[in-house]
Amino acid sequence: MYVAVKGGERAIENAHRLLAHARRGDQSVPELTLDQISEQLGLAVDRVMSEGSLYDRELASLAIKQARGDLIEAIFLVRAFRATLPRFGASEPVDTGAMRVQRRVSSTFKDIPGGQILGPTFDYTHRLLDPSLAEGFVPEVPATAEASTAATPRVTDILGRDGLIESSPEAEDGASVGDLTREPLNFPADRDLRLQNLARGDEGFLLAMGYSTQRGYGRNHPFAGEIRFGEVEVEFFAEDVGFAVPLGSIELTECQMVNQFKGSATEAPCFTRGYGLAFGQSERKTMSMALVDRALRARELGEETLAPAQDEEFVMSHSDNVQATGFVEHLKLPHYVDFQSELGLLRKLRKEFAEANTPDAMKEAAE
Amino acid sequence: MKLSSIIDNLNAASSVNQVTLHNNQQAQRKAAMAVLAHAEAGEIAARLRNLALPEHQDLRTPESGLVMLRGRIGGDGAPFNLGEATVSRAAVRLASGEVGFGYTLGRDGEKARLIALCDALVQSGDFGAVVERDVIAPLREQLMIRREQAAAETAATKVDFYTMVRGEG
Image 1 (cartoon, each protein chain N blue to C red):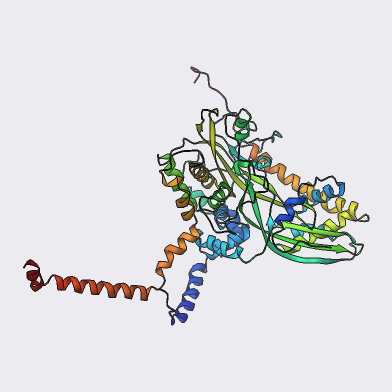
Image 2 (cartoon, one colour):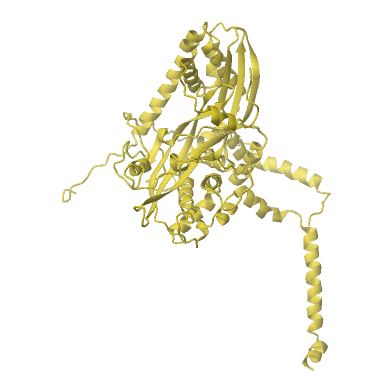
């Protein structure tokens, strides 16, 4: 039950003033700039763009600053902002095969065309805190080497040539692309909607779901066929211009998971796949997403659906951290009247219980 | 001159989309836009300042909005909606009649206007060559240098596997 609660205005105003003060912290310490956040906390910015579902580094940096580093709060701010702008349309689908790769690894083939490119990665670091970073650290100039002009085809394309892996689902003629920001979610949901949901889903939630599949709750034997990170060009068909206009480039991470094979009396066995794609350098996110995408294909692939990660209604209804935090955190808003009614009921029940258990009543019951 | 409506030109887009880029000027405009979208507004403005620009007016004052970015299932399959990006756009008309369009990622409306102005100039018989020489070409060269540097730094992190023969340890 909701009732208007009045009387807290001044307290709220002063609380927000205090928040602004706490956000700034000790004023003898220099204030953070948005460039500093964007350049030096780049992976936090990537996460806020992915889960905020809005590619704009500057806005994501502002959101992180305003949210005092609370990334879910920042994601909430970005989602609210995107609702204020008109939508011009949808881009042409990006071509991740033509990515200017900054990192590209495969755990399935050592010698992939284009090579294993480590790029800027935490992998193989010793995870020891580095005191030299505390102040005044100047990094070495990056090493350079002659860049190859050879193409870096997707590993799944190479496997696909021999028919060893299922091909990606083709678009049906005239089929529209599902958009969960425009139409309410219905189940069962098609894979386009599932991927959109996972792409903006909470990294922690997807990580736990993906992990659960590895531990046996919907096991599907994954290999990281390929993870690539880099820049792709974006084009937008503008009807006033009459052709697909280049808009610039964005950074994306893509994960192709290669999973246990499937075959039937009529079809030769082949590997199946799960797919992950996210803004920025988001490896944990895209790997988890690919595991969950594959798990959610259980119904389509005729697998038993017993595990949470295979239950699309469960996964898709709980993946969004803005929705989740809204419902969890609303519990701290005034529920005085709700609680009063519960309290009244509980007192009544206790009174009835006490009356039923008085010595007189017990005696009557015994007789 | 008909401008796109403010939202959702998706349907129109998919039907006209199949038209191939046979027009030479169209390819040239697209190539120029691909360079300009990667430049900063200040860099474009600085290069345009060296030109004696013809009279022009805003046909569409700069405005910001969103474009839904699409990926493909498995990288090469059916499209899906990945998430949105901020986009700015503008349109400029030269006194001689050429209409230029500017579209770019981000919320810098001035950059969209400068791209639109360049697009109009690229189409103009009098200015096409000079804007290519003094604005687009130098910006393209800067972009290529940045990309080559990044590619060289990336290449240094490529793994060179070698096999150890047993017993040689």
